[in-house]
Length: 144
Image (cartoon, rainbow, N blue to C red; front, side, top):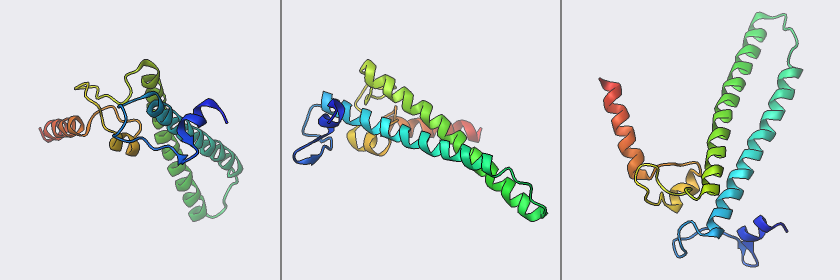
């Protein structure tokens, strides 16, 4: 078992961060690093499948409806991959924050983001409160 895997599991089963331990301890950081790396690997694996599928679907459909449907499917797949490309960038940013010691802390306030939020959204950079303030400001400016 590699060192990272041993930090995120033990004889009692898979490790889950808890509020009973120091925030962003070495074990918690290893847990989130593994979670982010696994997520990135899954996305990259899916994108390789997309490239293969898009190359295979270069056939010319004689029926206009079939061709339109195929084009629509391809456009949707490409939009999805673009969103995932942006997500990989956020994952890479989170991995950099793990390395520099700022992971898990709000960019606005410097306060801990919270384990629940990081579990749900490991790329989070703002606490729930800071995110809500940010969204309220966006809404106000959008309505202007």
